Length: 449
Image 1 (cartoon, rainbow, N blue to C red):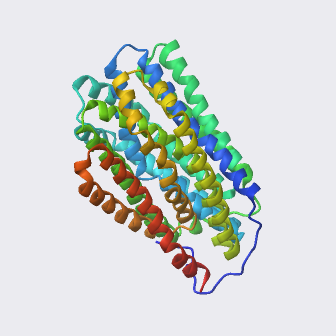
Image 2: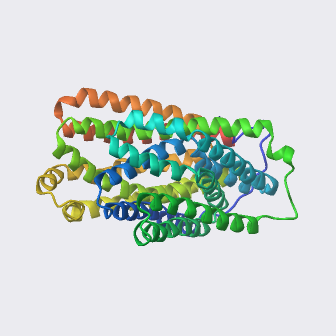
Image 3: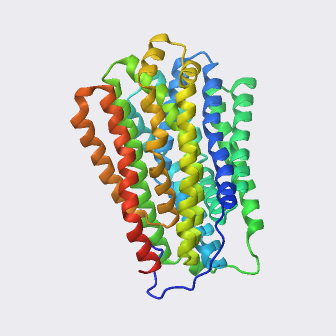
């Protein structure tokens, strides 16, 4: 549901300056914040890898996947909160800014408690779908059950981070992520290895870190509130506002699940070409993941600027924000392509020591390097549409793009691995094209012809 123009009466414009400094100031801290997450993943894997059991590593990986899928059902608490908050900032609506935060936290608490109650069901469904061996399933159960106890804190941290980004306080968002992932890293090592709690220690480390980050984030956000103004409970639980959030969540959930499905399909098809090709593709997908951290940082800047411009009804700021973030995202994409092309073989050698996998990865390295360029518009448009809360349009274009992805793969399936990579690139390109094509129409609907 698009909520940027809920009233037929056009609001007064509240212009603000959109500068290169603003864009970099928003993008840089969030890029650094996003990069702390894979570092945490590497540390957790390294800790569990020292416990002497491959089943424990498998349990960690499978458990993390099930948790990621479960949390995807409420991941609008980050992106959706950012767009709604930025629009309230643009309207200079302090009460709504606070109401958005309180609504998001209430939904996070309710959603987290529901997930705790559903632990047995979620675990059963996840293990049925993933079908790991008995030892891995046992490790997954132990890890997953502990991790899910922190669901209310984890979801609340999504809301707090989204609210801070929506305010344009990306530096505080970075601080929150450092507290979360930094504490998690330290506790994983201490509990998992030093105190010898093993896999359970790694799981408890995450729960404790999420609780601490929630406490710190709550204090930060509380200090940012204007305490002379407070929204009523009636406003916080306004039926229309909650319906808008539900629609926003549904659309973002469709987009997120199809994105996960697209990469799962890529992996599944790659497995049909043999273990060496599968491993090479997995190595090369790290190129795309790294590119994603940088491009996501700039997309986050677009979320805040575009959302604020929509709230302020500032058409010039809207288009200037798009131009500047697109410029810097393109510069980043070109730089990333250059780094991958020049140093790709060294990166592959760093990731794997298996010579057959290295040789296979060298063959297809150009495909991985190009993902930064073919994906730049898609990342950019995601930020724009999330900031403007044009979620329905975003989910529809994702469905069309996913169908185009499958069609291209079907047409090129006889090419083998190159056909699979071309299909992935077509998915990224088609998302960028379809969302870009709808941009002028949506802007005219929002700001008036």
